Image (cartoon, rainbow, N blue to C red):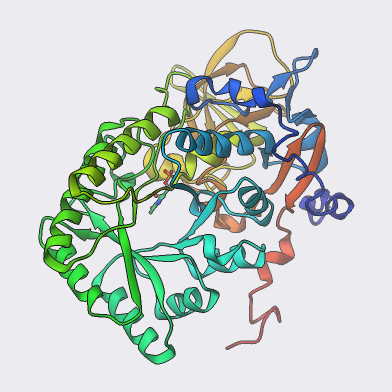
Length: 480
Ligand SMILES: Cc1ncc(COP(=O)(O)O)c(C=O)c1O
């Protein structure tokens, strides 16, 4: 067969009406749906994950082996119920204690029209960080006024796009952006709501690449050096920028709550100084997102409830100390909304034993669909999806791409894998597909959403001809 990936049947893609399974409205998911995240903590597998009598894994009432057969592997499976449940977990946690709140889904974790539709239905707002994310959001019918535009180097074109779209707010990250916005507003007129991203110099115990609130970071304006104060002064001089308040994002995959409290305290300390210096009073503040999720069953629990209580209490204290009305409290979870809902499914091919050293079990995906392990030593667990029972063993699950670092899980504990088995990796919903590439001319995987026994194709698997779609020489596009 010339194009083996033609197996991913186009007929399947067309036979599912787009959005047909996005039917679970607020009342069709039972009130008890939150039970699975006891106390508002994260879980490893989607809430609907189960094994049938034959030991085959099912998600959303659909057998994973059937999905793999139908759509090929690697395959990403999203569980609609888990996504909605995570959205509600945040909304209910904050709604109960701080009504003037907004939960903003950070689209960088994973973005697709079907997901955007769910985010919209669940009443969340959306954080985008590029013209591309903004484009996809608008094309998917997401209301512009519920979009927050982030990023540490927004280009003039992107900022113009955001102004034209009428986004809810722009989070200004640096002096350059203040100038670009000032020029655009002077040229085109209009007004825009903005937050200023502060860097409070707070460390978190996460991988260095996931820290964003430390002094040595490309993100935000340092409070410590006086840059943040200078930026506030500058913004107050620009006609058309309405500085609503301040934003801090500390990093990602964070399990401790104290750094968030420290961040809110630092934010209000700064806000008090800015009120005294320039008369700026915040009516919105944000401690960002970043709450950790379980990747291995031994990982600690991150509790959304605890997070909500801690930042809400700190915000109330901060507002009281300034003697101002309670500002809108905005949080920006990405990973903790979509991470637990996604499962990656691979098929085992070659198996290589190096006696006394290691057993490599190679799967048909790897760093092209999930760069996280080589990028920042991310860890995962795995399970055989097509059978259960038998003895467990320790193997290394390697990808198929031409890098020695292309290893998905080192020393994974699972049933002895055989060629042809399916391996499922939970907690694959965030920052996998979002960072996927065509390395080795890999075809990006199909993505399906499952719910109550139904399956919807969210994104078809790439085909070989997609690899030439942008190519000038082969006639894909004009050469300019
Ligand atoms: C500004 C901002 N907000 C929110 C997030 C979401 O973080 P997470 O997906 O860890 O919740 C990020 C991601 O790094 C971010 O940079």
